[in-house]
Length: 112
Image 1 (cartoon, rainbow, N blue to C red):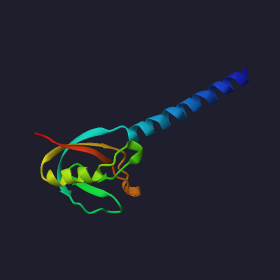
Image 2 (image 1 turned 45 degrees about the horizontal axis):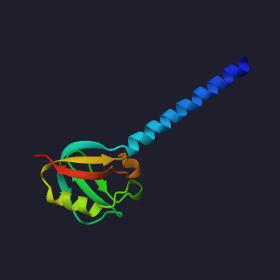
Image 3 (image 1 turned 90 degrees about the horizontal axis):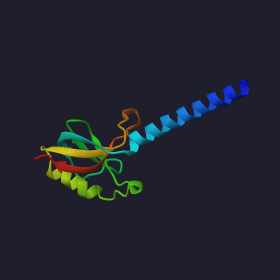
Image 4 (image 1 turned 30 degrees about the horizontal axis):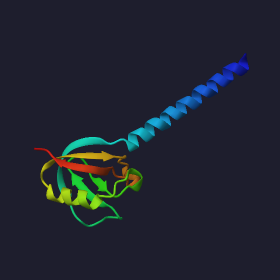
């Protein structure tokens, strides 16, 4: 009887670990949208990435081949064009200042 109880606990722990990992991956890879105003954007790269400064927080803009995103130059040009205006930014990733990680911009659309 004790052997069955131990297997059940181990199974429950493994399932809990899988759920936590799945939630972490989901929060990183699934895009969400932010409404903010672009304060600065330039066509120069910082550490191989374009940067977009907003009132909300800074964002990185780089090509992510695993997401089939290869239009970072076009998105950066749009950010420069919309500087000072209110926009909807679709982004994914995490902002971790200790690791210098920024959320990656997927698209930018002006709010009318």
